[in-house]
Length: 161
Image (cartoon, rainbow, N blue to C red; front, side, top):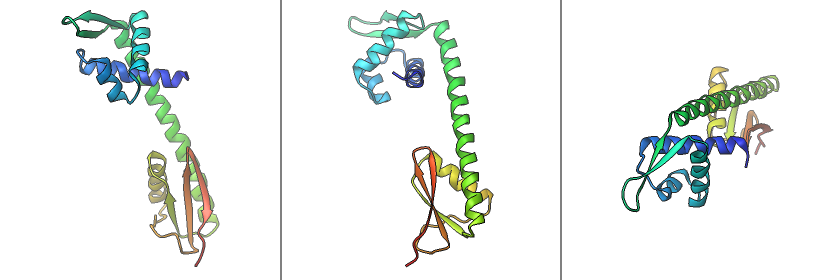
């Protein structure tokens, strides 16, 4: 498993446990959108490393307690997550700026953004910053199309009718 995926799951688990120590593995799995076995594997690992303790709350009910080491881990994972997201933001912003420079050089007056999500939002904000209107209709030949493909921004020329 990729270290970044493991770190993200560990962080999510620690946050959920902190929010509700009496939560069940089924509830955790539902909230995190993963299988119960995945939650179980991560919890066993966190318990083995001393980040989480388990106490019996009732006959069949467990209570998860984050240790001081677990709190420190959550803080480190949070900082790493923020740094990773800021790095991604800077990369996407630089890519958007590069593409918008080409849009200007090629004489396009507006752009149409194809795609949704955070990267498309960064493109929209970059367009606003550069005074380039974002339009819904891409049929005009003076409109550049910015297509979001994963983490890439691909520039296309609109087809005139």
